Length: 234
Image 1 (spheres, rainbow, N blue to C red):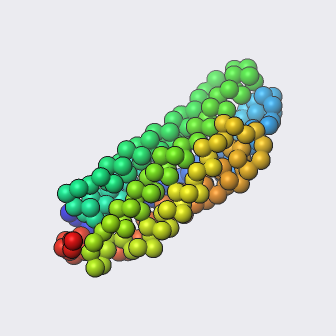
Image 2 (cartoon, rainbow, N blue to C red):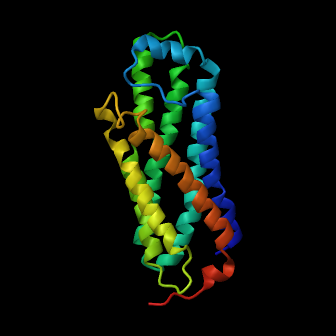
C-alpha cells in the first residue's frame, strides 16, 4: 500500500472544508443561515438578489461533496490496515460516507435548482429552499456513524504504534455526538435545533470542518510506508 497515494487523497479533507466554506459564505451568502421562520417572499427576495452567488454556491457544494470521496478513500485505506482481514468498521465507514456525500451533493443540486428558473413563484422557491436546507443539515445519523466507525477501528488497532493516535478516536467520537442534533431540524422552525440554530447547524458545521482538517493533517504527517507495513499484534 502506497503512503504517498493515501496522503494525496487525504488532501480531499481540507478541500471539503474550504469549498463548503466558500459555498456558504462568500458565494451564496448563507452565513449566517436564513431563518426557517422567514416567509416565502423573504426567501424569494433573498435568493434572487444573489442569483449568481447561489448558483456558484451550489456548484461549490457539489465539488466539496465530491472531495469527500477522496478523503474517505484515504481513511478507509488506513482502517483496512488497522483491522486486517476482518474489516467490518471499514465497510461501515464506506457505506455511511456514501450516504453523507450523496446528501451533500444533492443539497448542492437543489441550491442550483433554486435559481435555475428565477421566474418560479415564491411558493415554489420556498419549497425548494426548505428541501435544500433540510437535506444539507439533516444527514447527522450517517455522519455520526461514520465518525464512530473510524474511532472504533482506531481503538481496535493492536499495533504498539497505531496507524492513527488513540486521541484521534476520542476526538472522532465527540465529533459524532455533536452531529446528532441535526437530525431534528424537520421538527423546529426556531431555536437551537432549527437549521440555523447553534446545535443543529453551527456546532456540527464547525466540527465537521475541523474533523476534515485534523484527519487530513494527521494522515499527511503520520502515515509512512513503514508504519503501514508494521505487523499487527494480537
